[in-house]
View: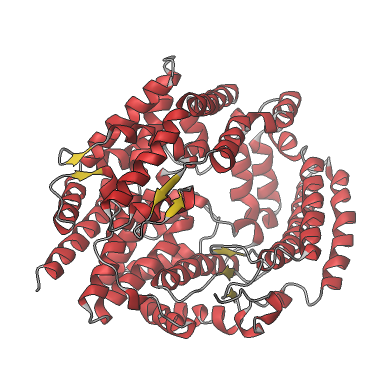
Length: 600
C-alpha cells in the first residue's frame, strides 16, 4: 500500500501559493496584533448616524477592519486545511476566530442603531454625500429587516439563547454521526464489512442485488428503531423555527428562511409545481434502468445501481485534467479562458492529497486573496469534474471581487452553484463530443442522468416534504413520527411512479437527511442546476447575448438581489420555462443514452 505523503514531501508547484496573502507567518502575527487594537476602536463609532460624514467614516472603517480580519482568517484556515496535524496553524485559526467573535460582540449595536432611525435619514445622507452611493444596496438591505428586528433587550435574549435554539439539530447530528451504528453486511466478495453513512451509497450502487437489498434493509431497520427520537428532534427544530418566525413577525417559517435571499415563496412553489407536472421523464429513466439491469421488478434499492463501469476513465494526470477543462470551457470566450489560466499560473490550486489534509474539495477566498481551490486529485473522471466545478466557483468569486467594491462583492448562496454547475455540464458535453469509446460515453451519460435525478427530482421531493410538514404544523396539526413517515412515503410514491416497488422501509429515509435541519435550503440545489441548464442552452444555441449576459452575471457579485442577478444572465427563475429547460436537458440525455445503447 502506498504511504500517504507528508505535506513537506509535496512539491511547491502542486501547492497553492498562500504567500500572496502573507509572505511569512511573522507578517501574519504583526497584522493580528494590529487587528486586536483595531477591533476595540469600534466602540468609538456609536454615534455613526449623527451625520453623513460620520456614516461614511464608520462604513469605511468597518470595511477595512473586516478585510483585515478576513485576510488573517483565510491565511490561517487555508494553511490549516492542508495539514491539520500542524498545531501552529490550528492555534492561528483559533486566535483569529476569537478576535472575530470579539468583533461580532462589540459590533452588536450596529443594526439596532440603524433601524432606530428611519431610512429617509439614510436617503438624505446618500443625497448629501455621493461617496455613500456605493453603500446604498447594503444599507437598503439592513432596513429590509427593520420590521423583523426586535428591541435591543429581546435581541440580546435571542442571541443568548442561540446555542439552545440549535439544540435539536446538534442532538440529531451527534446521534446520526456518532451513536448510530448499522451493523455488518457482506460485500460483493462475501467479506463482512461495516455499513456506514459514507459507504451506504457505494453498496446501493453494487452490481450484486443482494448487497443492495441488504444495505437498504439494514440502514432503515436501524432508523426504524430510532423513529421516535429522531422525530422528536426534527419536530423540535420545526417548532423552534416556527416560533422564531412568529416572534420576528414573518408570516411563516418558510418566508423567514427565504427572506435573506429576498426570494418569494412563489419561486419555491413554482419549482415543485413544474417538476410535479414533468415526472414522466423520470419514470422513463427508471424503466430504462430496469431494462438494463434485467429486472422483473424494480425496487427502491435498485435505483442507484450503475448501468456501466469504465475503469480507464480513472487514470488522468492533472495536466490532462487541466487541458480538458480549459478546452471544455473555451465556449465561454478568450477573456474567460485567459483569466481561468491564472488559477494554474498563479497557483490558486492545492492539488494532491497529503497526510493531515482536509478531505473533499472546495473553493475558498475573498476580496484580498486569490479564490483558492482545494483538491484531493486522484486522476478519476470525478476529480476532473470537481476541478471544473470548483473553478466555476473561483471564477465567479474572481469576477465578483474584480468588478465590485468590497461591500458589493459577496454573492448569495442562492446563486453560488450556478457558475460551478455551468462548468461541470460544459465539461460533460465536451467529453461526450470528443470521446470515441461507447462505454465511456455511457458512463458520462449515466453520471449526468444521476445528477439530474438527484438534484432536480430528489431535492424537489425534499423541498415538497419540508413545505408540507411545516404547513401542517403551522396549521396547528400535531406532528408524530407516523405523520412524518406517511408524508414521506406518499411523496416517494408520487416521485417514483407506479412501475417501481415502493418498499415500506423508505418511509424512514427522511430521518437520515441532515439538510432538513437547514430549513428550506434544498430547493436551491434544484433552482441552481435549472439556471445553469438554461444558461448553457442559450450559450450553445447562440441565443442572442447569452454569453455576454452570463459573463455580466458573474461580475455582479453581491450588488443586487440574487433573483435580479439571474435576470442579468437572462434567467427568470420565477418562470416554469427555466425549470423546464433542465427537464428538457434530462430528456435529451436520456434519449442520447437510449440511442447509444441501441447502436450495437
